[in-house]
Length: 339
Image 1 (tube, one colour):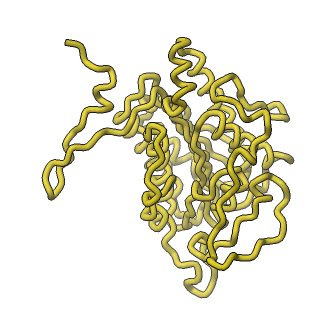
Image 2 (cartoon, one colour):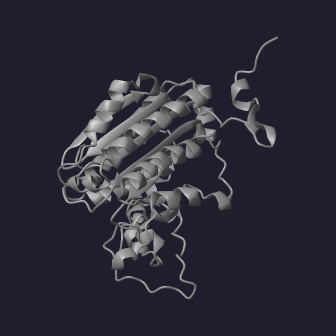
Image 3 (cartoon, helix red, strand yellow):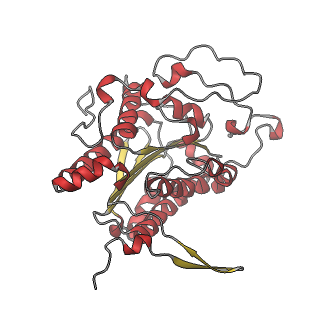
């Protein structure tokens, strides 16, 4: 009697609770997983008092746990990029290669220093991630390629930049290039992009990168908040890549849960008589679509009567014609500056 190759992905197991054993089904395992994190280590991150360094270790540990749970047939790849005015890649490899030495190196790599080269770092990370996805796809048999084209979630991919300030060190034009690269990554690779931000509005940063504002997690600047936010990023990436292409119920949040949002940014915006690092907790302004499309921002738009954010335009409206193609068809993003 033969065993189904997908047995471990569909067999229900027992979860012991106070109400007894409850059968649960494990997350859906993609053929290949590729997750990336781009972490800000500029001098201002010192306000977290080591939260970003501890958070880096936690993030990698959670990804290793996910790799052991899912066991994708083609592997589970983790890429961790750090940046101030320099861009470094302290770890890039299989989850199986993570050791205590790697964790120590990551914590050291996140030690605050320098300025903020955000957009160049995003470009660097996305370019390498798309190359890996293309290379893995090229190795597949023709039948498997057709399956991945029809079910793109089988290649689970997610990236998450984190910053606590405005870019002040990237090359001219990097902001627009990072927008185009992120749109290409999300649309043509069926991938998930999310952002973490402190000391600035995370939803605005997400819009500047062409992402759904709901893909933004507002982060506080305390040690606990920063560490929690990086843990939440790992959990959200796992949910996005192991959902089998199915969107979660609206009550759960498409990217982050309400509990994750509240624990990552706990301070009330007007405590101590000044605005704190959590602008998302305030009544948010209506998003300006000109920001999401890459053009200079116009004057802020007035709040509507319900004081709610209007939904962003469909992604297809933001894409250039050459981007509207099926995923994995040798459409790797090429930087105009030859990076």
